[in-house]
Amino acid sequence: MLRRRLVAAALLAPAIAGFASGGSAGAQEPAYAATPPTPGALYHDGQSGRYLLGGSWLYRADRGNVGIAQGFWRDSARTEGWSPVTVPNAYNAGDLSGESMNGYVGWYRRDFTLPPGAFPASVPARARHWIIRFESVNYRASVWLNGRPIGSHTGAFLPFELDLKPRAGVNRLVVRVDNRRSGTDLPPGPSGLWWNYGGITREVYLRAAARADIARVRIRPLLRCLRCAAKIEEQAIIRNVTGSPERVRLRGSYGPASLNFGQATIAPHSSWTASARARLRHPKLWSIDSPHLYRAALVLRDGGGRRLGSYAADSGVRSIKVVGGRLALNGRLLSLRGVSMHEADLAHGSALGPPQLAQLVGWVRSLGATLIRSHYPLNPQIQEMADRDGILVWSEVPVYQVPSAQLADPGLLRHARAILSDNIATNQNHPSVLLWSIGNELPAHSTPPEDRYVAHAVALAHHLDPTRPVALDISDWKGVGCQAGYAPLDVIGVNEYYGYFDAGAGATDDRDGLSPFLDEFRSCYPRKALFVTEFGFDGNRHGPMEERGTYEFQSNSVAFHLGVFASKPWLSGAIYWLIQDFASKPGWDGGNPLGTPPFVQKGLFDLHGDPKPAFALVSSIYHHAVQIAGRRR
Image (tube, rainbow, N blue to C red):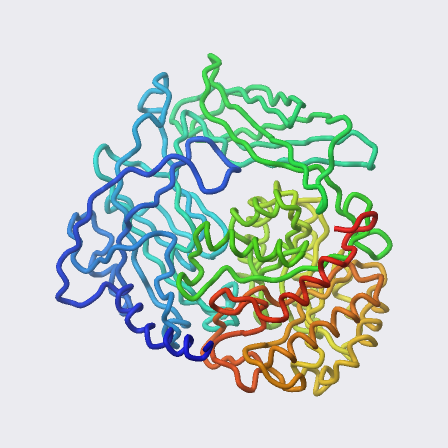
């Protein structure tokens, strides 16, 4: 049945791709009318004055890369060649061809009018400012408003913002997206091990800023000891969006505690970095078995005391430290059991909406997992669900399988540091973020370029956020030996596939080698917190337990590995790869002799969201595991 459904999906792919490309050449111009954005955002943390730029968009493919020359960006009401879509949108969803994986150019357009009532009446027109926020575009974005370029951005999975100067009446936003990646992009291209879905893959918002904008907020709860009062340190960047000096004052609260940031006169188009501290006596701590959240709120007012805007976020007080070679949350040693995910499915590609994101997190909860990992920063909606549900997040940047020679490239290093900085700035307020991972599967035998990257990235992460450990996910097997270049790291995660993939000229063929390998791994890094960040096995059919790719082989192998992990009391956690099957790259069978390229079928759920037999097994083991000292989850 599964194979029949996959064949049907493959047959439908050309039709889906044709629709996404704008249909037939003789198609009639689609009717299209400008509409205002809708108030609010799909996630809670952030500034007031946000408007979701959803509704009807237009799309046209540009496989020949002629759109700039032909003026797709121009301020024209004509809709010939465009097709209606909704955003988020992955323009090559359903197309599993080589061209789709390698990428091409696509264009988006949204005609909109400004929402009424966005500004207080006391704010004059000259002090009213608009900002557009893209939560993620894969991979290169160039943006025009009313025929004028307003900015560009490179990189996916993290937000970026641009200033707008909209006009009265209809405004025409045009976005050119190019998802072709080279070897110096992150993740490196043109291929990769998860599908290269191009497009505006997360939501787009407009933000109204009156006189000044609360551009960025850092909320840092500090816990010196378990019975101590918590120290709350907050920092906000307030940007004057006008051409005149603006007098503003900022106040805040963290639960019952008040914060006074003071006041300042900000020069035109300049910023004020405002700081404040508070003390929270007898705080309720955030943990995986009791995820208590405090509401942190800021209010910005003008010199006359009139409200200009606000910012709010859910925060949690907790400490995360490496203690004696173990990771501890609030002083309680961890032995986490987690699962990895890709934000993708067959129908939507990587452009998932709230129902699909909620389903992913629902599966994690029902599995009994306390840790989520992905190869890239997760959607803010998933981050907030993790905050509320007591699920930790292994927050990783896509410095993924980068060869040593490219790690020496100055441009790639600048890009890697920028992504790491952006991830910390974007996600540091989430109590669910366990640590910052600076990459995945760099060369197993570390080289001078890799050692330099690790040292600099760890130092940067510690500087930007001294409250969390820094990790690297590595490929390793018996015989690789200890790597001196990993010394700056606090946490190391090992990706191991003993008894499945062949690594190290047969070193991982026999699963009985797993236990001695882990002991060797521990002996190399006795003072670091250690995780298994990947282990997994394909399952797409019933059959003999000894046959790779059967459900029976998958279940037996998972049970064996989890049994070995349980025998290592020093292990801080293990993360199964992965929650649901996904499209990898053309021809990839995932090591399954009867696989279905291009899909990785190691998931506990199949491509259609049906649980495999291994799900019940893993769920039982996870629910019975003591994942944090002192209490059974």
